[in-house]
Amino acid sequence: MARPFDLTDPKEVTERLAKARAGAKVGAKVGGLLPHPAGRVVGATLGGISGFILGDQETVFPIDMIAIPAYQAYMLNGTPSFQIFIKEGEVLTQVQQTDAQEALEVLEESPQPKKKQRLSKWNRYVKKKSNHIRFKSGKNKGKLDLKKMAKVGGFGKKKGGRK
Image (cartoon, one colour):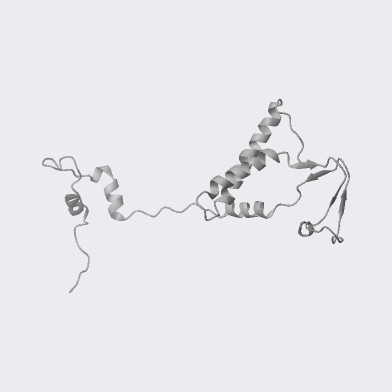
C-alpha cells in the first residue's frame, strides 16, 4: 500500500508528476513492443498512472502481514512453501530491478544512430552552387540544366558498354 500524499505540498506533487512522466515513458516503450497499434498509448497511460500512484518507491505496511509466494496465492487450505512475517511500520523498497526495467535498459542501449550514406559523385557535384547551370530562357527558365551540367562535369560519358 503506497503512503498517502499531500496535494498541498508543491515539492511532493512535483516529485510525483516527475515519476509519473518517467513511468509514462517506460510504459510507452514497453507498450510499443505490443503488436496492437494502440500499444504505446495504453502503455504510456498505465505507466503514468502507476508512476503517479506508486511514485514514492516504497511501501509502508499499516498492519502486521504475512507474505507468501505469488504462485501459491490461490491456496485456501494447506501450507505455503514459505511465509514472511512483516511487522507494522516496516518499509518495502525495491532492491532488485524487475524484468520490465531490465528489458527497458536493453531497449535503451540497442538503438544506435544509423550512419548517413555517402553521397555519390553526381550528388556531390550537383550540391555545389558553383557547378549549377540554369536555363536562360524558355519554359524551363531558371531551372537547372542537368544535361549541360553532366557534360561539363564529365558525367555525360558512358563507361564500358556492350561490344
